[in-house]
Amino acid sequence: MSSPAKFRNRVKISERHGAGEWTIEKLLLAALMPLGLWVASSAVTLAGADYGAVAAWFGNGLNAALAVLAAVAFCGFGALAWKVIVEDYIHRPGNKALLLVVVNILFFALAAASVFFIVRLALGSAPLPAGV
Amino acid sequence: MTHPNPTSGDARDDQTGRFVTQPNGHVRPLSPHISVWRWHITMAASILFRVTIGAMTVAALIALAWLAAAAAGPDAYAGALAFAGSPLGLFIGFGLTVVLFSFILNGARHLINDTGAALTIKPANLLSAIAVWGPIPLAVLFWIALFATGRVSL
Image (cartoon, rainbow over all chains, first blue to last red; front, top):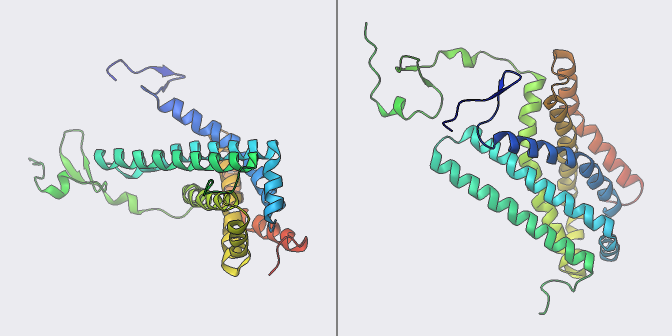
């Protein structure tokens, strides 16, 4: 923080990790463009499909892998995008820090639960709750 | 002429931007230039992208519920499918496609503008108009295709 400001092309570069977070957010958004089109085409495939067709669809490793990628990329992007929104509108340090913790927990849980269900479907695991 | 700092809590604790600290350290009310504005399509696109990110978060929760139903076996999935085919389910489904296409078109606009391209008035207006209005015809075409191919029916 106390080091003198550094400049590149006469533009001040971020003192800590802000620029890195911005780059990651943009790379995730760029990855979500083709993944979003794939989600739309998958929605056409799966619209109105019965359980057997959905199970078979997830049984294809490519579909399961792309679904995991889409879920993780979206949750990473969502956490960073919500961080920007929270930082724009919430200025009391305590509230801001608390909201950012909530945002990170929510998107981490969303990603973890999505991957858990997708992996179970891809492996053809017994229906949840298993072992009952 | 002296301009004492206001001691009232309102100005000191201001979170609204109605008061600003002048270079001399005095706290003064902000001049009302901020209320002088009109709508631009670029502004609408920017605001809608934030709204879309919020809506996509809700959409992700709905997708998670669908995954959970599938992982919970044939009975639970049949229940989810019956709800998705109901009038309310189809309405939510239409909304989900509008949100998805809005995310793709508006995200593409943002990525293009982030590279420094299309920031002059005409291309910025064009990209914004596509991002704002494009999702609706795309979603309508999407659902026409679903009904026409018999994947969905009322």
